[in-house]
Length: 82
Image (tube, rainbow, N blue to C red; front, side, top):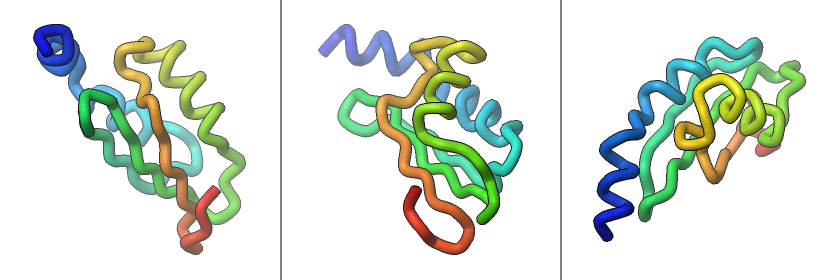
């Protein structure tokens, strides 16, 4: 339990959220902790060429593995789950 608390204290979901919002085609991003895991919900423009793998890779390289969500839910603005 202590390890979980240390991780959540050192990782700010807002850092990841802010980064995701800078990505081309991203309309909205929400990042939060759920049961000790960082999760993200991202809404994309309908024509955006982006995948969960690409977002995960970009997060890992740019903001670090600790700030990379373990799960992404990506929805385009026309409400289709990608």
